[in-house]
Length: 379
Image (cartoon, rainbow, N blue to C red; front, side):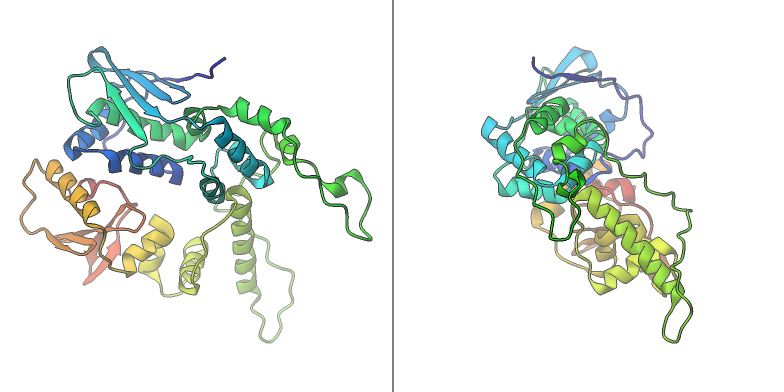
């Protein structure tokens, strides 16, 4: 029987509510916005998505659907994976226990998506992959109703990446059942001198993770204090610094277990990260604030001017014009990836988002989390 999932309609949202907080949800929105032929309709879709007028959403293989205002039937189609592509995808999932653990923990590891793409399995949509349809009289591609449906879908994807897998053709139960019956490579024999218990050979990933969530503890709350290393003070040994480094290493190791990989950091980025995560006074205040708002991309937006692709700037200009009803305010200055209006500035990051800044004492300081629409930050 074809898998179908239904989701209740989203209630009205506050004006500043954000779409897509996960990287895969943001990739979904980028595919929508890169495909759009009308930035004004796209902006209307963002606003409409927050009004509570989009009805319950139905997700089935290759199809996202809802009834919107005036009983319009709104559908967004996504190409399903072939059986051969699903086999290649399952190979990538079963190859690493951390992949299954992450998916069951409602996370999508970067390296799983990259491995799938290397195997010619496109999980995340790109330009042209989302095909909108609507019974409304608007000829937009997409119209505001289909755009709103896509924006709301990013909330669904944030909460459950299996929604994306269902759109590609198979749901959670299909995936788990396929992994349970999959023939995994035999476990390596124990090394010489090792124990000979059954646990020494390991357990197939599908068996270990098919019955529920992975047996990893929940991350500790931010206020939890880590126990310092049991080291005696000695010349040249900073016990407090070692405790911070140990806590940091443990946190990043857990992230690797959950996500499969982490982007490598430069020495400078790692210093800023440590200061941001452990409240260290290293004289990096603006950089620390940028990291807390946007991680490595936020730090790059603070420190490095660059020239974005022309089409990205044109899209942002259209968003600004639609936000000001076609009349940008006087005094707007643009330079490379930085647009300035009085004491406010937005900077286009290499991750496709705009980062807000405010001017204090002659310096630009990070002022909040990034958005994809610069007009929401300059209005």
